[in-house]
Structure formats: C-alpha cells, structure tokens
Length: 138
Image 1 (cartoon, rainbow, N blue to C red):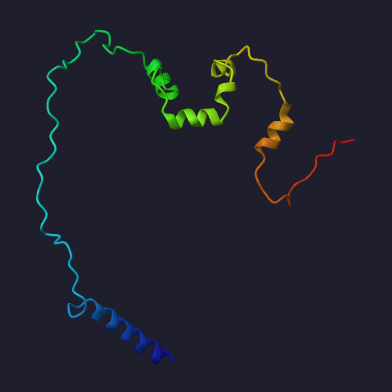
Image 2 (cartoon, helix red, strand yellow):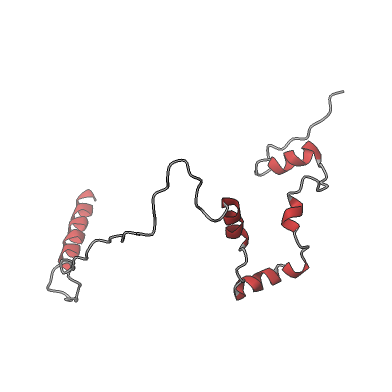
C-alpha cells in the first residue's frame, strides 16, 4: 500500500511538471522584464512657506477644535443626495435641533438605573449554564 501511494505521488508530480512545459497550450504572457523605469517622485519646493520665527505665535488660521467639529459634523458643506436620503430615512427631519449639544450637557436630566442594570449590560455572553441568582443572606 505504501509503495502504491509513493508511485501515485510520483506520477502526479510528473504530470504536474509536464503541464509546465511549452509543448502544451502556449499562452501569451506579459514579459516581466520589459518594465520601463519611471523617474522617482519628487516633491517640488514650496517657496511660499517660511520657517517660523522662534517665540512667535502659530500662524494657523483656524482653531483645531473647529477643524475637528467640521470634520465630524460636516461644517457648512452641503450634504450629498445619498447622505440626505439616509438622514431622511432615519427620521432626521423629526430630530430636535441641537440634540447633540443637549445630550452632552451636564444639566441634562438622566435616570440612574443603578448597579444592577450596569451589571446586566456588562455581563459576558454565554449559554446561561453558569448563570446563578443571588439570594440575600438571612
């Protein structure tokens, strides 16, 4: 049995090697050595930039916080048709204006559900085999 397996393996390898020869179907392949060298990319100098003087204030025109808010919430840019359709499908026309600001406001009234709800939400997933109920001590 072992001898037959080695013979079959040998014949299979010979068959695969024969498929690599040029006597079979001769396909047109790209020449991997016919690659033209391109000039390396060069960043042109920007003559309008000057190095900052020591001890001077930064010259950036916008506040980083404003840039972050524009990136997150779109700034004053108009919405695309697909974004408008998505917001409308999600009920964006019925949302209260400024809801993002109200949610993070410290004066917003929230209900403290207590540690039980927090424990339920933070509980690991499982099949329930290890679940136990807590009984108060008498």
